[in-house]
Length: 406
Image 1 (cartoon, one colour):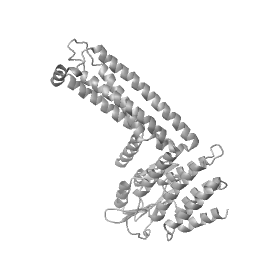
Image 2 (cartoon, rainbow, N blue to C red):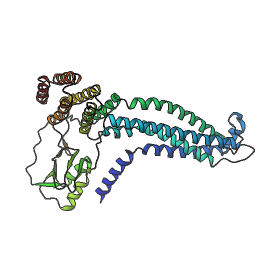
Image 3 (cartoon, rainbow, N blue to C red):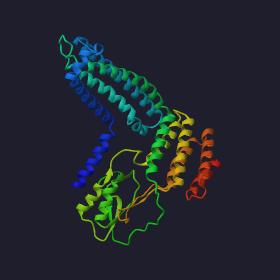
Image 4 (cartoon, one colour):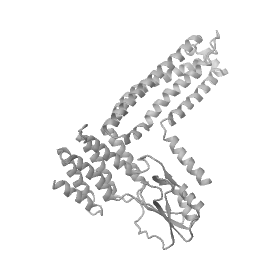
């Protein structure tokens, strides 16, 4: 039961924090709390004293206060509608010319969510103030301090809108999108570098139990701490048979569990609860998707309807840098428990297959284009030169030969 709740919490947490509404909701709640605190200050003895002694911030007319708040609400709503109508138009344009898979990366952009949150927060702040304005001649009970803060927030929203226009026009540029996917993929690979000395891993000479897929789905990874704890608890070793991001049919072998005793059904379910299955291509969790997104951008750019070889070359440059990182670093595939006992062995996409999938696909589409011919030869030559002694160089030389003899 604990593992089911943990998995549900993990999936719910990732779903909520990955939603476009997460940051706007937090900011809107923060503005609601801010409005309450400002009203407490306004109607406190300190606030009344400030408004009585500093005439510049005194606002006697309740009608004026209501007008300011209602006008602010109307104006910020217009800004929000215009801003995100523009976002949808640009996203639609990017999807038609690049790849639908890149939209998730663009939509989840934090800056856009923060801007939306400030707009919604200002609206919530102003609406809350409207309900507290009183018609009293002294003006002490008009929330003048809150109204003046609302004016400052509105001015801030206007400047935020101006910067947002600049930001969104830069964000949808092809080179910006390619750079973002490249950086996210590189960051994901850097998290999986094996800093330890390479050790040969031999599966234990123990009875093996095949764990199969309960339903057809995408295998997207696992909770490492939970799985290490499970393997240690049952004194076994988990050997995954497929890389993360693989679509597997029901009944297909997913992993091997080596242990002296066979796992009962409830333990198998507990093991499966530590794994993640869902639809999607999260680059921040699996660098494999980043390679495919960059390849897809290049192929889309080379399609007859778009015919933009320079964008394909930019994708090729980004891919080459990522492959250069793979050549010079080892990905961690083996994980130990706290007692330094081997417990988990991952399966990664082979370098040769990944290289062939990316470069060969781009070459087949663009081999008749001079830009692609030159860029492909230059990038493959540099890739060989970055680490000539690597075990991965032979597949690179093979593709370079195919490109050169064309």
